[in-house]
Length: 495
Ligand code: GLU
Image 1: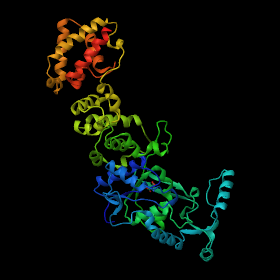
Image 2: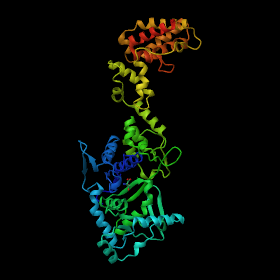
Image 3: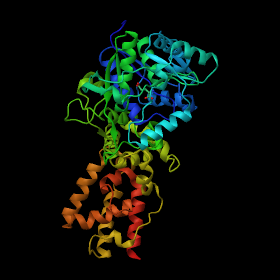
């Protein structure tokens, strides 16, 4: 092997990139980067019936958005056209079928595979019979006994046929998995898998195995659902006398009730999460922890830290629960910890039609940042801040059983204090602390209570019974808006 660590992510373009597939891609990439190896993207598109137009582009774009970048294989150029990079191409499997056919022929020639002429109808009847009898549904081997001459004759007669592996019918086979150690399979339960279909196309088993060999893949890292394919793959490696790569099967993704994660693509497509506003870094962090935690006592990791700490052997065997609350929590954490500039770049366009005053808009957006799960939340959270006229009930302006006249008195005193603050001082950074000191001082001097002063003030400014504190609101709204709102509340309390 030219290079010790060569791994591939080999999706089929049959839909949009799924969260589980992103995890497979990421673990391959982390493994390659950790060991200074190569991460390859190969497209397995030999199932023509399930091919989805735009599927390859979606895979590449979703990976790119999350920063999981292959060094070799299929990719998109700056214009979005599909290109291939590397010396082991083609990396689009359907362009390799002549090689697959030649490999299949070799398997037949060495008696490791055979031509099968059984019709779909016969196979269907066989399946039904076996189901009725409560037996496993396996091909019964009718064509295993055909001599090469008989088979050649039927092929020459253009009889439709497939090629099947001639698997042992008894005994067991052991395979090694980096995560699960030894896995044993009983040959009696394994079907003579088809490797070339009637349309001449190879199946996954043959194509993936031969391509992994030809591309000098050192480790096959893929989802648990592929474990059942392992004995067939090991058989193919042995049939050719090839050394198999090391295998690692990643744990299943589960719903909260521990059922297998929903297959409905729209619930689990990476692009949908990105479109909803989940940050790529949060999504990547979340996906990385589906089945592995580098330290066990932290939840937030950068891509670089994940790369440094990645250890395939430490990946869990048991299923990983897909917990949307955790993803939301991570997204909130990432939103809180990004620079103000980056945060504003993401959320400003969402409120650009609300005001022409950009610095006011920025202050509003920063005020609500702690309560944002998804960027789109800022629209509702800032709604009242941008309104010219608030719409609240008069009763909400008074604290508990406070008389209206008392609330007016408090607002009037605060108004007088605020009138003495300049426009610039009102909104300068740190103004909230000054407001807090001065207003609390006023309250103390008057011998009032915090609640009976700050409650009416806060509702007057926010229009909400639950909101940021009045000091932050003052700094955010600025002098004119704050005084207008206090005046409106003062008026409302008089009516
Ligand atoms: N084409 C398979 C898929 O869609 C690849 C499985 C493998 O990695 O071997 O997931």
